[in-house]
Image 1 (cartoon, rainbow, N blue to C red):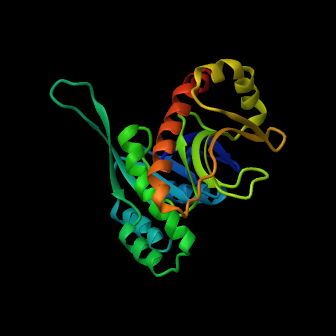
Image 2 (image 1 turned 135 degrees about the horizontal axis):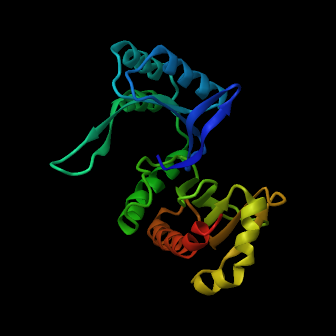
Length: 274
């Protein structure tokens, strides 16, 4: 997952969750509960309570060591969880090589059973459209990783017409999608900077519009959405029919280069935000 921090000590009724994150691709919440002792019923119960209260899809318990009964509990919870949800158990250690300073080592001791999930997913019908998009992302992601190593952790192809990639700041994401532009009757391929909190962040970018456009080798479309509640700055390859597989190499080259240019131009303005 590509994760962005939503907050720490996030209120859940009269309690507070240690860390709350979001998966930039899906928008799903990830709740983390941690302790520097062996696992206990109290923290396992808190993890489940916080995940329920925050409608999280993923829950992570971090501890010094895992008691067998708590490891078994997480394994059982994974066995009854859906495809886009689950529980992780992680042991935290300090390690040292020679006289080096201690470093943190996180060992995953419980994780969702991907094989069982794939088997369950394989029994469900997939539409031609979703199968096509899965094939597209399966070819696109390796090209993205080769051109921009370390940018994204995404390895599993989506079956949707869109995917998001991290900007390093919560609430701002780079995205790529096949979509109909407003008023159009055909598909386009859109690369964009998506701003979830458009009311406060979009005007900051818009005030720098001249400088951004001068530095950018792209034709940017500035699109405030929903009275600035969310907004985006987009570039379109128009038309771009996703069913035309013969043109996928052309689309892929454009997408990798365009996303890279957006990232190059917007990294400084994003990092400069208060």
